[in-house]
Length: 360
Ligand SMILES: *Cc1c(COP(=O)(O)O)cnc(C)c1O
Image 1 (cartoon, rainbow, N blue to C red):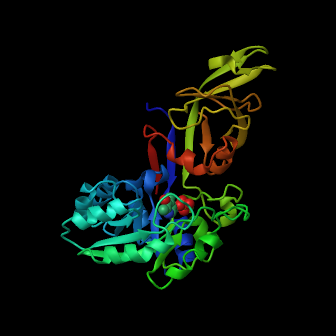
Image 2 (cartoon, helix red, strand yellow):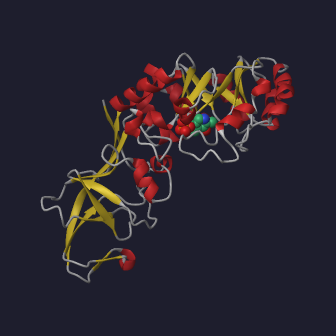
Image 3 (cartoon, rainbow, N blue to C red):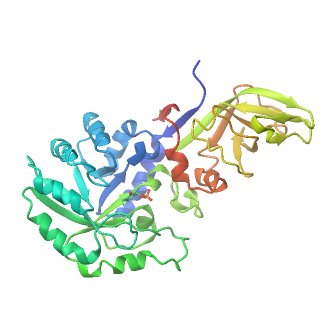
């Protein structure tokens, strides 16, 4: 018998979300962003579904690109942070990856490279995010330099929004509006690839290509907006089972640090899910899971492989009862909020030891 925790991955939900994003993207080029193993969902198994809807896949590590080529992915592949070493260029050349160029060093590597095939590059512009890219005023010169490298073809200008989420305060120093304004002088120079999920859903960026991430997986980019209201369905349900019970008398405690102390006769259940699976150990008074359609509190300290829940009010639970950690009935964004983080982080943190089970 294998340990009962698993991440159910609903490919029907993925299809639905992709069809919605496809429609919202119109005839713009649609990149599906699949960094971090498809936001923790398991990239390889989802390739056939992505193939039905996206024009290309954007990822971080050139090795992931090789993996998907070997698995049969024939459409475009974009290295979303570009090459990390000169040697990555050979890999890009061989496997036909497109790459972002965001700094001088990458250009120097390209100038020295001997490309066999045309390399499609996306020039990254820093419009206020201040992580990667050249400032708008530097772009014409950088473009000139890139255009002088044999076999290098600059495809578009790529920029990234810092605050595309709809409920983010508009008094932030960086807004979609001022990030777009920073690009005005560059319109017409190159096509643009600007929007992430928030941009696609909530802004008119006037771009020719877009990069959809989190909404493909059925999770809202904005923790204050439900996925339901966006018409998307969660793809991942992290599920486990009850593997033990304990009956506690008032005054008895449970777990490391005796964090939980019973104030009434308490029926406690042990669930096969711990911080080594990706459930945060961080203190949080709002932790809940769903058992038999009902929310019950997580109590005590989460341990490496187990957590404990209070099922005193659920008389019918038994060994093997299913426990939803997050997913269809408990949005991952809601769980994340209790821990002071975002759904993205919890999804990416699901450990490799948790099997991804495709529903198709
Ligand atoms: C991760 C990422 C995206 C996707 O962002 P979502 O908010 O998940 O849609 C788009 N563009 C870049 C450059 C990224 O790194």
